[in-house]
Length: 177
Image (cartoon, rainbow, N blue to C red; front, side, top):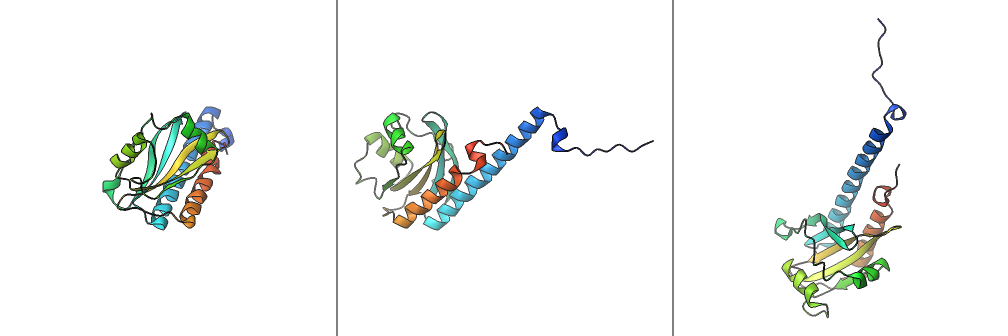
């Protein structure tokens, strides 16, 4: 009796299954990349927390990744104050706005924003948009919780490089490989 080959190539796979496997591989690649970027930035900047705030709907999102100096700083899953992040703020980040706040107690920001940051134990805040061709994919955020922090040009450049690395990745841009 002839031996049957059990080997299959990608071209033999059902198109629906192939599409699902490609999407799964992209999700795993994306997750590993975001985890690496947040971890690298947290170590490089020596901050208490670096998070990715991912937008799953227009201006609605949540913290989907975090790198921490201590587990007590975890805000994983936090959704943020929707009433504070409105179209005006979104337009600023869509335009590439970088927001560096050395001391949330001294910065003239909206009360709801300050209250939200206080709830998260934030004292200094650095926010950089992750922009893809279809719009604002997320925000890369560094938090220093223990004290004020003057963000240096090098800190800002590192965060921007991390955001750009994410924004240009095919797995994040939604490009099928």
